Length: 168
Image (cartoon, rainbow, N blue to C red):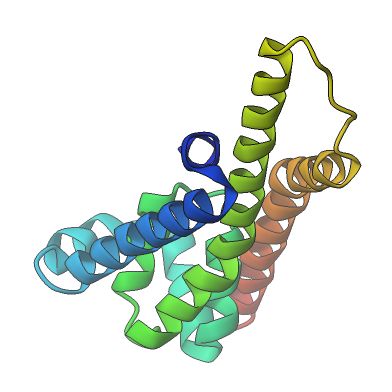
């Protein structure tokens, strides 16, 4: 969706629209998880062993844990609702975590969409464009981070918390 925004609205407006939309969606989920859906979310999470470890880590270091959680490979819905029922993560802290996590990705996807749009227009006119080396490099980084580093970091985080729990 963020890539499509960059294609349809250009880089700046696509970035603004996609980042604001993604941020507001996360805020709505967090707010619902803190209010109307708190009991439901709590009941779904209470039997999850990983969430119990995450909750303990958040109690010790809420901001760092919220950031690690945001960069984890868990689905966005789980990230938003799980953080909503952890009281040490305040509303401003949540907004900061989603902004630190979300803005670079919104920037990348809007740039990719805009670049794709320019390439499509050039192709329709019979022209070609040189490869965007910076954008290609960023895509490689995001792919390596998303499929390798992020799951490894999350696994290390959960394993570390599990070891600490066993020591108690």
